[in-house]
Image (cartoon, rainbow, N blue to C red; front, side, top):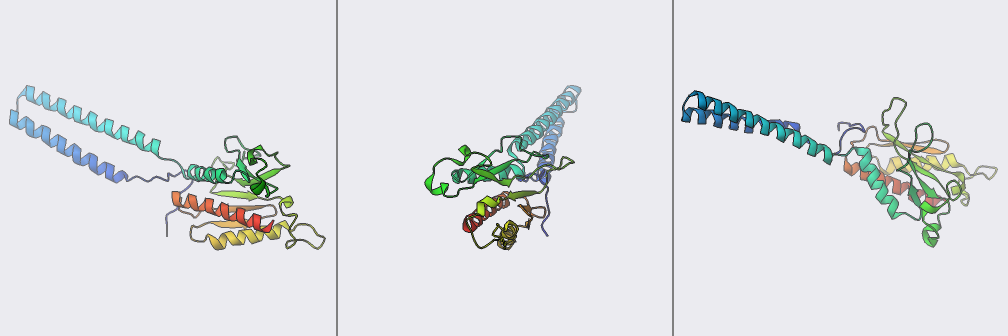
Length: 245
């Protein structure tokens, strides 16, 4: 079974044991060289002091190497949610006449959820009357994907959420109640079912509610490849929405 990682783990992995082994090897070589040099020169007080100075210099070099290496690795590593968000932004840019984001804001609601929005009039993809980022919130576009957020304990949840609006599906006739209203829950159940059937191998679980679909990736290995798979899943949901609407 694959080992799970939480959202605070790093996507970029590093073998700390290798670092320890290399440090031990080169430290041993350097120390041995200093001792041999001391015996070659002779066990005199000046030579002994020179050997101590060389050992101190060796320790400083190794310490500087370890510190610099850790700083370098830290600057190169980013968390899983940042990787997912980066690829999601690329996807949004490719769909700029349909979706836009507010990822750089604090978000809204109790948990300050950040999200991207989708145009209600999907024909804008063809007409390109305006960029989605210029559309009026709640009138021309509505929330579509909510990013993972922190719970009451400050922990980042390993899930994100799709949100849907009845107005998106007014023109379709397949999912309607007896009184002619949009049966939104039935649509979401069908979309969630499609998610689970089409993305089973990456370890996610989608569950439909009245107006939302929650996608949990608690059991998913958090790699960059799987971050891309999640964005492919967002693309799949977009396609489902366009097909039903």
